[in-house]
Length: 79
Image (cartoon, rainbow, N blue to C red; front, side, top):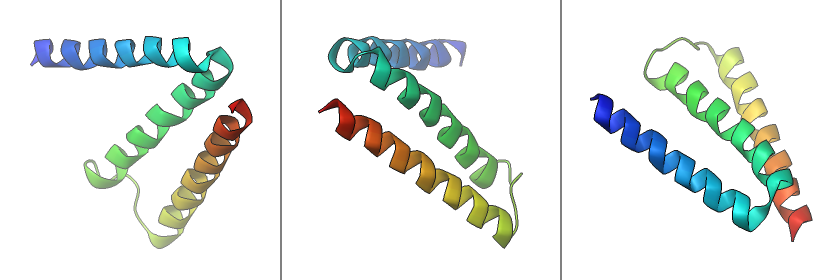
């Protein structure tokens, strides 16, 4: 199991280096901040069932939407 975790970590690090070389730091840092938050929140909803209730789902959906909009604006400004 530990080896699998290490492989996943290494793949993520390689992806980070490739993104930095092609996109630049000003784009990759915000993306790296948004991605893990979304993945962690999805784990909280579907696996651990920590987030419940319609109001919380709507708030989480709004935050995801805002994060996606800001990420899209960053990507578009880069081009």
